[in-house]
Length: 308
Image (cartoon, rainbow, N blue to C red; front, side, top):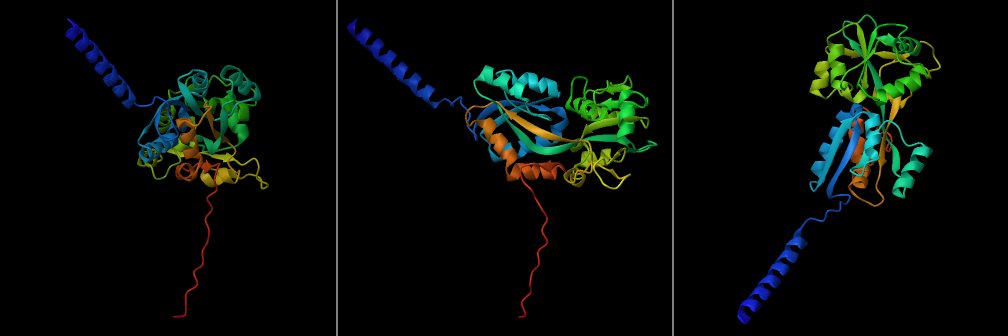
């Protein structure tokens, strides 16, 4: 009887130490800048360039996993209020009031900043009669005074709709001729098949001349020229491009912001740093956006040949 009790006690102690040893081998649930798992939400109009960022980041840091949801700008901000979403990437930062609300609920202010500059790109069918627009003409279309159908990149409050309402309509309501597609892909599809509409998407959906899919799409659609409102010379129009954004010639320019809800250096900080430093900024440049954190200038070099 005593032996049975002793064996039972020793067996229980062995199971306890094995259990402790196993638990010690479990992965630390806390993430670091180069390890772990987080969820982020991204404005759908930035999907192509953020997909490229994530592809390179994951290959560079294989111990990380960033799960991304692409949705409207308003939905991204709703996600930021939840515990599960660490970071959002959208076309606007936080107002002082919004930052104060987050500080009251989190006990710290989220970080935010501009990563790059994008364009709201007007696209038309190759067979469309007009592909050159003044700001006044775009305002007439968006307000419904000109009843050509305008197609937006979402059925909810997207950054494209907000930007056009703020920067072009200046407070006027959208006209009944403005319709919503499910996403940017569908805007391009609608415009590809209809010469009597105008669509609006982010530049990274149509501006990458190295992307075979976008090159094929540009056989059916074209990016419209829009009046340069800051140019001293009158009647100048610009296509959305890296150069026209950098020089302030294309008027429908918008920033690409990160907003990070992290009080210590975790994976969100690591991904933000990646996008802000050389490799991430080069990816924005390669996607034909304008990097905001680093300047990449072409320099002309001269090599002096020796007389030998």
